[in-house]
Amino acid sequence: MYLDLLPVFLALAAGWLWRRHAPGGVDAQQMALALNMLMIYLTGPALIFAIMSQARLDLALTIIPAAGYVCSLGGLALAAGVYRLWGNRSGLTPGGRGALLLAASFANGSIALPVVVSLFGHTGMATVFAYDLIATTLLIWTVGVAVAARHAAGQERLSLGREILRLPPAWAVMIALAVNLLGMPVPERAVTALRYVGDASIPLMVFVVGLSLRLGALRRLPVALPALFIRQVAGPAMGLAFAFAFGVRGETLAILGVVMASACPAVGVILAHRFRLDIELYGAVLTASILSYLALAPLYRWLLMR
Image (tube, rainbow, N blue to C red; front, side, top):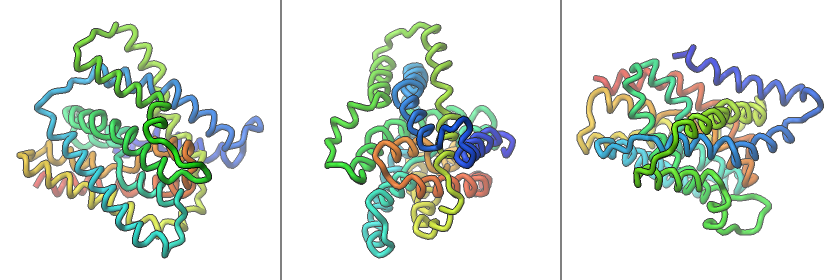
């Protein structure tokens, strides 16, 4: 499992080192802005369309994404309540509150996938894709955008509908689902070309996280502990209870638990940059959630397989 996650940590370390040394005179802020625009307008939409237009939308897997909605939206509601009560006392800015709500709500599929393969083998990939593509991807580019826009710092009040329509990944999700559900053929070479471009998104997202990291920001983790608990314990508990009530058992339930308890999504960094949320705080929570996930994933497997 740890070897599978080595590329993630290498990309994270590369971004952090770039921040410290700024090779070629390109500082972290310039680099992050350029890479965010690249992912929003090119690599992200390419990857989303390539995967979602070809994904198998099997009705037998409807419980998996439904449980994902319960986990994410339930976690978001719980986090909103916690930080509404505690946020003013802790001195959180609107941008900080928005960053923590994003961190508490959505799972990181790009990290969950290698962990699931390590713990369960390749048979667990279908559950990961069903959860990540049909639940997380749709939610983060709709509800996640709404949360980020509502807490945008230094901007006038934004129109949610206009903001979503201005984001190419949202268009990619809608078009890909339409193509998939209508059975419209997509040339294999086109899908291959889009995957070739889009696959760059995953390491770039982690690299941008590294650009945003300040290890000193870990001192701010006390205010983020409720978000971490909701992301990796409370939210998954709600989602697993829903799945169990609808008959999900055994290895599938264990895989679902491991996916639900994943780290905060790297794509949250894109939204934090786009809407000027507290990027430093989000980066600190993301780093902590990745480390805690390494300890929690085998525990979830052990508990749920019993």
